[in-house]
Image 1 (cartoon, rainbow, N blue to C red):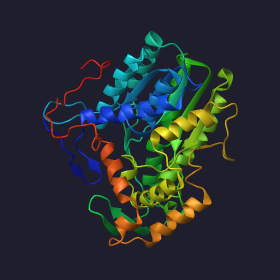
Image 2 (image 1 turned 90 degrees about the vertical axis):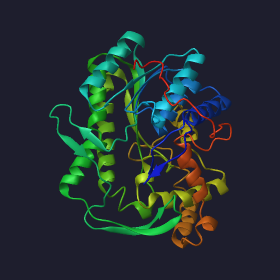
Image 3 (image 1 turned 60 degrees about the vertical axis):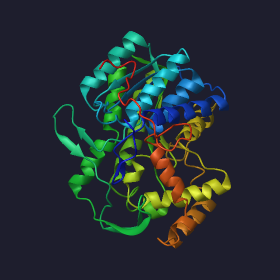
Image 4 (image 1 turned 60 degrees about the horizontal axis):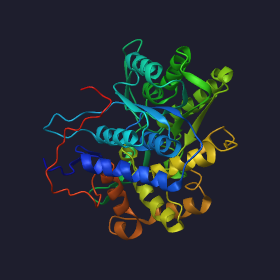
Length: 396
C-alpha cells in the first residue's frame, strides 16, 4: 500500500517501514561517524523501540559493539494497516546489528508482567551471558500490577491547584490556552505506581535473583525536570512525584547492587520531540522555542546525540559526574541560563499570527513526523510498499 501520515490528536496512527528504517540507519551512521566508545558489552533495554530507549540500544550496538536485548510492547501489521513505528524501528535495528555481526534479540509484550520478565531472563541465560547495562526507558500510560491484576493509569496534572498557560495545536499552527485541573490523591498515587521506580526495582531484583547481572553492572532510568514555566504541571505535578520516586529508587538500587559493585542512576535528559512529549500541554510550544535558541547557539541535540554524549562524557567516563541529588544531567545545555532566558522570552511573546516567524514550529512538525518514518529525502513516499515486516528474532 501507499502509506501516508494520518494524525489523530497528538498521535500519528500510521508509520512508514522504509522511513523508520531510514531513521534508524541515520542514527547508526551518526554513532559510527563519532567513533567507538568504551562501554557495555551485554545490554538489556526495557522500552527499546522508540526515543531514548532506541537511541540507547543503537549507541550500545554501533558505538560499543554490544550485544543487545530489547523489550517493548508494539503492534505488528495485519497487512491492512501499518505496524507501529517501534515495530519497524526494531526490525531495521536487528538487520543492522546482524550485518555488524552482533547479537540482537527482542521480546514483544507487557514489560510490567512477570511473564515477560521471566522470558527475558530465560533468553539472557540461554543466549547472552551476564548483563552489564540495564536501561529502563518505559513510557507507558497504564500498568497492570503483576501480583494483584489491578489496573493503574497515569495522569499529567498539577497538584493543589489548576494550571493555565499557553499551549499549541502543533498540526493546526494555533496558539491556545490550556487549563489543567489538579489531580486527586488517587491520581497522584496511580501515576507513581505507573511511572515511578517500582517496576524498575522489580526488574533489577528479578535479574539479581536469577544471577544474570555482571559485576560492575550499571542501570539507568530516564527522567526530565524542565523549565520554570512547566514546573507546576510537570516537576511539581503528578509526573514529578513519580520521578521523585524513580530517583529514590535509584539510591535504593545502588545499595541493593553493592555486592556486585553495581550502581543505579537517573539520567535527566533534554526536552525533545517524542511520542510522550507531544501529549503534554504547553511542552510542544516550549520545545519550539528551545529548538530555535539551541540551534542558533549550536548546542541542539536529538535523542542519538544525547545518548552518545551520555555514554562518552558521563556513564563510561573515568568519573561519573552527577548533580547534588546524584542524577546525571544531560539536560545541561538546555538548562544554561542564557538558553532558558531566550527560550522563555520567545515562549512569552509568540502568538498564532507570529508563530512561524518567532518559533521553530516547522522543525517540531518535521521531527514529529520523522518519529513515524515520514519526511526522509531518500524515501519515495508515493511508492507502494509492503507493510508486513518481520522482526527477525520474533516468531510470529
